[in-house]
Image (cartoon, rainbow, N blue to C red; front, side, top):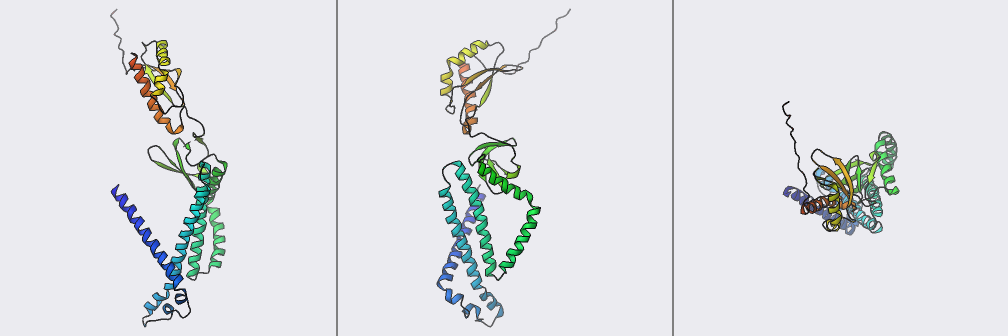
Length: 313
């Protein structure tokens, strides 16, 4: 944990230093523009007799321009992200659309930044863009899965079937939707584990957040216990059990016998709760029912083995 904190602090410090350098270069380039970018600027007019030093000094205008472009790009990204968050806030659907739009905008802005930097360093951007168009076509034919992921992500957001904050089950893995990106969707479960699924692979899923959930529990009673008596005890203490389960939205239902097990008669109980409280509600129900049953002389059985000895003929 300490190592991760140190790494995070080091990365943060490095980012701040880089941002300060870019900001300083931008200010210098703006204030001394005529002296740095003029044809007879001192840094490009071979001020020394050493060719290596002159070559390095000639790079100063390009370096300053690069830092300025990066700083302006970061500033634009911050402003655009701020505006998108303000526009797409409120409902989970708006938040989901906002994050997807933000991801697409970031890609476009960084692409423009890279092209601008290459132009500063003398690269033929027009030829590069033309070649990139052909290259994109070739890559697109070979990266159909990536394109499918992007298209599937757009439809997931536009359809509204999946939103940030929804609790869903995808391929048997239950978790909360943390992010719907351009290429994949991230889920996080109650243990903090994160699962990343490609958007095109999300064919069938269960969204459990749109309606209240119905957690169920199984509680066993001995075979010797009278089921009618058990039911009467439960009905008489239903309100008390409900008070002991703050996560429930309704009274607990007694749904009858679920199974005739080896050492017990298993009874089925259920109630309504919010999906976020699903597991907490189950734990509270088990504890409350066991407590009430024990207070009324109904014990929860333990595994038993009955041995019959055959008598001699």
